[in-house]
Image (cartoon, rainbow, N blue to C red; front, top):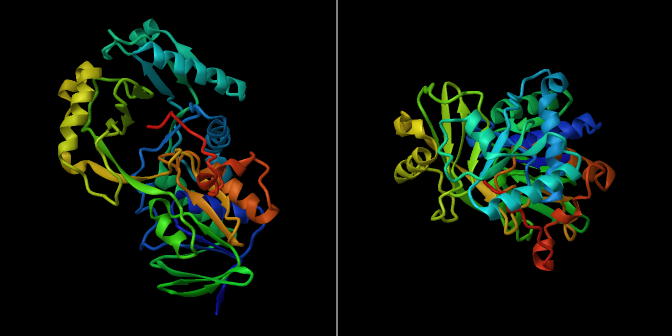
Length: 385
C-alpha cells in the first residue's frame, strides 16, 4: 500500500514549486502526480514566460515581489538556471485614462516597496525605440526588474531539487478518484494505483475544476485559449527590448531567441479546452504588430511554429490558494489567470506554509479562499494580459 504525507496533483511549475518549498521546509513524504508522460506538457511548457510586478492589486504586487527576486537568485538557490532576463515591462498609454491608470498603479507599487518601477515620458519612448509608431503614445510605465523566465527550465529546477530532498513524482498517473472519510481526505486513486494520504493539493491548472468536483468542490476555473506567434530571426528591432504592451489594443511582444514573440488577447475568444492554434489569429496579431511597430510590417513568421496554450481563468482574475474549509486536508493552488509561472515561487511558499504551519507568513492569503466566490468577496485585477 502506497502512502504519502502530501500528494500534489499536477506536475507543472506550480506543483513543482510547491514540492520544493515543502521539502525545503522539512516535509519528507511528498508525492507529485503528473497525468502526462512528461512534465510541462500542459500550460507550463506553452507559457510566454513573462514575470512582472506591475499589477493593480496589492496582493499580486506582493506575490511578484517574492517571486521575481526568487527567479533572479534561482541558480544560486537551485544550482539550476531559471532563464531570468530582467529586460523590463513597458506599458504604453494612448489615452488619458490609461495614463491615469498607470499613474495610480505605479503609486501603489512604489508604496509596496517596489523601487524599480517608474512612469516614462513619450520622448523617452521615442528616443529608446524609434521603430514604434508613437504619434498617439502619451506616456507609459516601466519596471526594470520585470522580464522573462524559461518556464520549462524553472519547473525542471524545482522538481530536480525537490526530488533530491525526498519528493517523488509519478508520471502517467491521472487521478480518477479522491477519497474522503469522517476525518477528511484519506486517499487518491490514480491510473498507477492508490495512495493513502491526508493532504492533497490540486495544482493542475486549467484542468483543476473536474478534479475538485471529485470531492464535491465547485471551483470556478475555466480554460481560456491564448495563442502565441514566434517570428523567424529578425534584427531590425533591438533584442534588448522589454516586454512591450500596447494598452489601446492589448497587443504585446518581447524578444525571443533571434526573433520576437507576439501575443494578443483575442476579445472574441470563448472558454473551452481548445489547445489548437487557430490560423485566422495570425493575420489579426500581425496587423496589430505592424500598426504599432513600423518594421514589423516585414516580420517573417512561420505559421507552423505558432502554438496555443490555456489560461485558467477565475471570475476576478486572482488565483484560488489555500485550504478548503469544508474538506479537511484539501488545498487549492490554481486559477492564476495567466500568472501561474510568474507567481509559482510565491505559491509554493504559501501552500507549504498553509500545510506545515496552518497559516502563511509571506502574505495574508485569506483573500484567495475559494469561498470568496459564494460570499461575494471578489478581488479584481485589471492588469491582465
